[in-house]
Length: 167
Image (cartoon, rainbow, N blue to C red; front, side, top):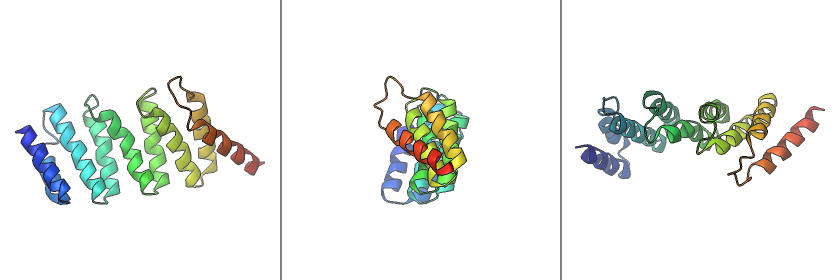
């Protein structure tokens, strides 16, 4: 039955019938079957995102982690809670979500990105004080030996610019 629910939800979603997919997924997203319920909640968040309901999408992604913290999609969901805001240019909303991710997953799959996008979100929302704090946080937590270093140069350059703007 679980495969059928997920397949039918995917069909609705592919046809852009997001409300039908959401209604289907919601029937199973609060059940006692942790992994399946988490998957349904995750797919609900994606449907909200695809239908342009950014706040609902972000909140639902956060709920996947809150309710099912050991599920397969928990870590990615917490990251995507910030990403959906960032992609819509809602930087003031994105920054705190990325901070929650990076504080929760010190060495997670998306930690370096979350640290960078928290910094960039504060920068783009013109909150220089928080950008400087987030940039310093980024620099103290990276470079990670596994990192490719793609964000360090950007952060250093912007921190330099912010420092001389304030002087």
